[in-house]
Length: 296
Image (cartoon, rainbow, N blue to C red):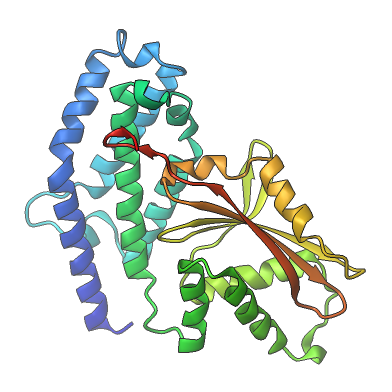
């Protein structure tokens, strides 16, 4: 990206974040102050109430410290030295929100959900939407060849079959003689991670949960994909086994915070063809809770 385009990007991000803060900070600060003031009769009465308040305090502290700007200041360089540093903050902040969202989720009770919980959930969702929008602008497609943009397009439209076809075509473009290492699950996992990163996506690999490690999470604008890879040296289809692992270990639960569809995909690779031979996908979650009106 040339210097002029980088300056335009920095300015666009500063304007967007400043307007985003102006529209929310005063209201959120009022909510935070009220919850903290009445904590003994309010939030402390909820499940894990003290930890939930700590979560809220951390959210507000991060927003104030990293996104707050005085008049005349710019997000970059006043708060962050570069666009990449800002992007890294957003990724880390979003991961923190996701990792601790169970404190909110455990207090959902449908129409009986406490307003404190709804307010915090609303806050978290809006932060994640802002983060995703900024990262999508930063990681744009301008320098990605058109054929590879199709890979992203397929995921954004949940066209898994065509996504697999395109990934296989990329795998097949690697000459046989270049393959020095023995094929295994790690080989294909690494290939997926590198390929998706190079086209401007943000795959998360080996994500630790309370029940194990998720091979890959891909958070797209409209859908979260939970992926599990299985390699078979004897050409056996293990895609259903991979999907069942996702379901049995409930890998999708930390991502309900996004309030958008979550899809699990099990991929099966085999020795003979050295490609994805089968996949099995299933919807794991469809949003039901409307955080503004409690329940749809």
